[in-house]
Image (tube, helix red, strand yellow):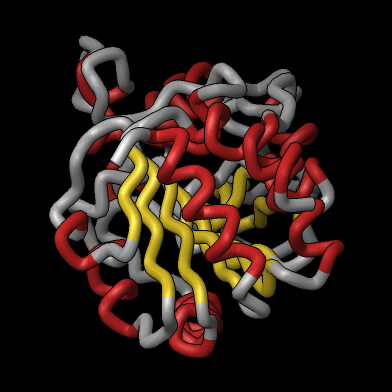
Amino acid sequence: MKNTEKLQELKKMIKNSSSIVFFGGAGVSTESGIKDFRSKDGLYNMKYKYSPEKILSHSFFITNTKEFYIFYKDKMNSLNYNPNITHYTLAKLEKQGKLKAIVTQNIDGLHQKAGSKIVYELHGSIQKNYCINCQKEYDAEFVFNSKNIVPKCSCGGIIKPDVVLYEEPLDNDIYDKSLQAISNCDMLIIGGTSLAVYPASYLINYFKGKYLVLINKEKTPFDNKATLVINDSLGYVFDYIDKNCI
């Protein structure tokens, strides 16, 4: 089936669905200019003094806070990036009442910037930060614009981004809400993720609805379980949805 035929099929599925959930990975934001992790140009294939996996770990944050923040401020700052057609179209689908929730692995906050209200951020968000001593909260602007490499609280404590680092557990409440949303929807659209890592690969097993749609440039381990697979860019597919389904 050609992609044009697949898009028409997708249109029918969206029309026949009343409860859609979108599950997204790093590929959702790459068209906004934000680098992903695992592609050949991604962060994990760049050369640093330490590997990105090591830098973005809880133990490294505790023992090498300055080195952590040098990397974090350089590579995780998405404040100057804007949402793309995928973010905006999802926000429109939510406003229309079709889309019930977004479950995302991204920490950039672009879904909210585009206007989406129900967003479950599995890995936290750069927008939320807190003092590890007194728990006082700080926004992303404070952290990234701090004159000190390591941002400090008014009490003198170190501020930590509220993102899930390696060696840290996911937030149980967010995970449970994500699981519930996926369990109860009649259409699950998955985009911009290889589905190769937990929890993405695990959560999908809870989908019991009619339509499972996978949109990704590369193949995924779940292609054979999908109702529809579209190997194309998210921007191309969501531009079609924006023009034909809203």
